[in-house]
Image 1 (cartoon, rainbow, N blue to C red):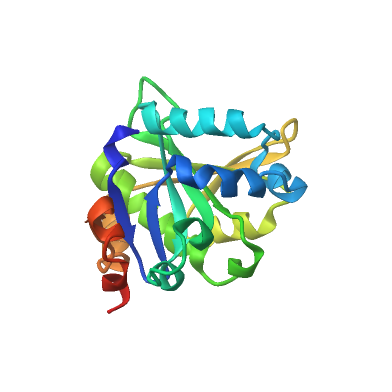
Image 2: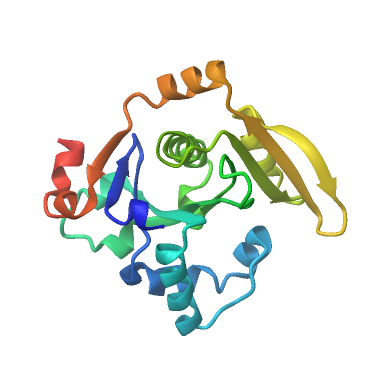
Length: 209
């Protein structure tokens, strides 16, 4: 989506930035992992195909993605941004007749950053962005049945199981955002900041000062 091409979202542990061409080589290395291919139901792509996908994410009106960066590491200007990448988070507007419905995906690709609450924080950040910028009112998450960690995380966040597809071996979880859910979510994420990505890149250390 063009809407977030210069948007940076700052949380407690992470920074979410637009998926740029500079991120593609690291992302491509991640997706060579059979484990990540299985968890994300993805097929391996060539590097050129990965660049094509990145351009699609940037241009298409039904896809919104951010790269997840380690906030503390990114604040060190001597570290290249690509070395701060830990995963990605995506929103798909899956129904052309209902733009308020979106599918949410979170991938923590770096094993060293799993189990630290990053997935929960990123999910809440992306839900806030979807609510306030994209008009999303119902979120879905489709997760492989073997991925009990992700299923457990979404359930802890308040998502409810609505169906199981044995053919694709996945469960669908949903959350409809009514006023009480919205108030709770916005309260939890009151400290999240939206910044200009290009301006912030030139002065990263502000994020932890």
